[in-house]
Length: 442
Image (cartoon, rainbow, N blue to C red):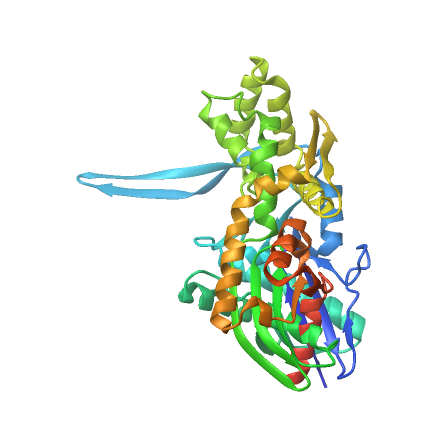
């Protein structure tokens, strides 16, 4: 008999849990991680199409890619057949590819599901659709879970945000893509639960009396909210809501507003090709594609001319030494540190790059201030839809890494009262609730 699990396929981290009717067990699927129950949502695909996830993917990427050699070769990519008026010609298209590139690291797989216009990516000679990427990750997650449990897994309850996309059509398409990916990964039965409702099911295990609660699920990709009645056999969803704002937006804001001068912003004015490279630094998906011979020649020429010498050398090192992932992690680590500290240092010291920035909580809160109004708006709208006043709420339960940001904790305290704000396990409450839901629907 196969077992049914709950799966949190998250923007930054993922996990798998089981529930036996009395206790939830979050499976330790990443022994190389500091928290084995948390699996980073990253995928590393090698040139021979071997795939790895979690901390193993990160470590293999660092081993294979950082400061490696490159060799670009001209490769035929297809042809353009042009017809117009009395003219007809066929033109071959060539691109330069790095034949020494050992593998490709991909992040924000869940974000790709809802990104308008993003269909997939080329990895060496193969094209991976968004669904292919999700399938590959989920199949490896499933294999790890089966190894830990010693049983076959054929059924799963997957979490999903309240809004996968801004339009109903986009939302349905994203869920169907994820459902199909899970089926292709080997799950015969797949159902979904809203992530904030899953977190509520986990919180319900601690209740001794009924409560009106608000779940504030603020992770790496979205903010999801649920207003519910829980406890003593009562369970009612009054309303749910969400907005496409979360941790990855804050990382991007830090880079755009504080870090780009380290790579020449403000010193480069009349070189559009270089400006385009600088402005691409916050974009995880775009930056690896900048490592072309043409861009290297452009940067080399500017550096020889003494133009913003140290900054452009840093930009070149970031792009051509595969330091982007390290850089983004340093920015994210500083953001996380500011939840407890008044200041943090963002630093990166490698070949031709010596970056150091003291970043304060005051600066961070100023950089993300535009998002506070959006968060407050969706929170109050969801509460109004539920027909409740803040005074009627017994507890507001925070989950997800971004829920620990003091600016948003203060917002919740202002609206509901600080004594009502509760912190659940930021990284396991959703997957625990999904495991409970999987048992309920088995």
